[in-house]
Image (tube, rainbow, N blue to C red; front, top):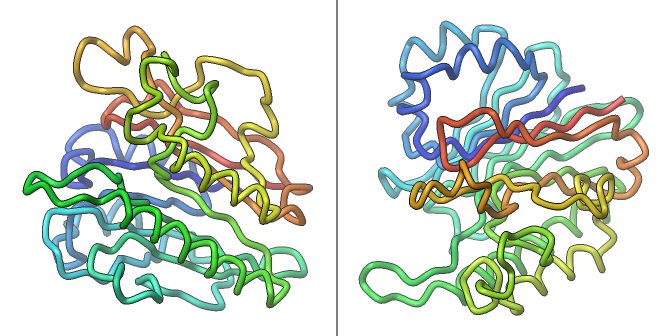
Length: 264
């Protein structure tokens, strides 16, 4: 099974480029998108035509031109449950979470497609770091409720945190920057404490200069001055079925690159 995750930073922009070629080339069984910044009603007929092999789940939200997630899944996959919004109502108006549960081998896997809050101040000065930390706490509670049912879990998407120094260019210069604050990085420590596994880092514990996001400014991507913000985390039972994971750094139609997980 192949699963891809990508923060597209506006779906209507990437489909004007080579998005459908990318879909065809990957032939993924499941496609998870973040920051689609569109309502379901705005999905073009072109998307429906080119993704005819897929069913999809679009977020339920009320805030326009902001956030939003979507999951496309091959029609052969046995879906047992779909959720188009986060069960915590204080976070449900931005479409940050979509979820499908499907049968895989002899178990049920819950795939959570998540666009975690940025945590930086809003333009009006509203402090959003506490909102971000609260979101992480609620997400951990929700994941635990799934695992309490003895189901496997995959969490993918834009986590908006660089976990360790190896996950960010120039860590010393950014130690007081959002996305790399100690209080944020501690949230990922908690995910590890809960038994979840960061797939890429478990497979590549010492591999440096591996990023998934680059600023549009100062030729950051060309100089590979980036951050690893996009992840696949899995429950330990599922990690045994991981075949491979990669960053598709050559796909450049967003400030994020896609990431791809392959399972046996």
